[in-house]
Length: 135
Ligand code: 5GP
Ligand code: ZN
Image (cartoon, rainbow, N blue to C red; front, side):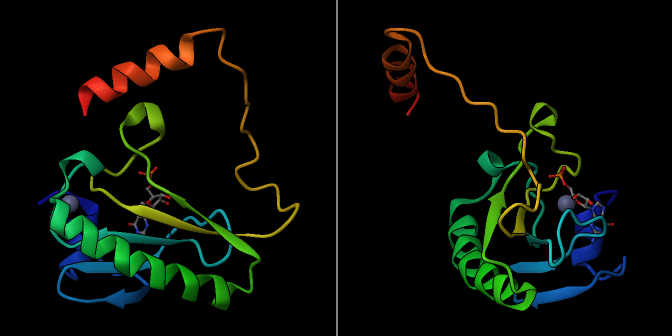
């Protein structure tokens, strides 16, 4: 078992836990990008979101809502981001699906790079059609 989050879930590696039940664990990120930065994980190993058992994911997302509210209140932040990196290209480093809860305040400069652009004529419709075909 070389997955770091499996080891944390099994209590073999210490973590600062904020929530735990049979299926879900939430703990503070060891290298936060804002105070209260929390990770929420299923205790069972799934690499990415699309690999996660849907029932476990549904339960986790319900817990995520409650935990995020508590994190926000405890951090005294105005808002928060929920982030789930999937794949190296998206910045996933730990291959055990996890949701980041990142407390946010106006002007905090966290996650500030968000370069928007516009689709050329017709591209959005083509992409949407491709997505629909995959569903
Ligand atoms: P990713 O880039 O995979 O979405 O994020 C993984 C996160 O896990 C990073 O923010 C990183 O700081 C955190 N992390 C990695 N190893 C550990 C650990 O051993 N303990 C804790 N608490 N967080 C970790
Ligand atoms: Zn794992």
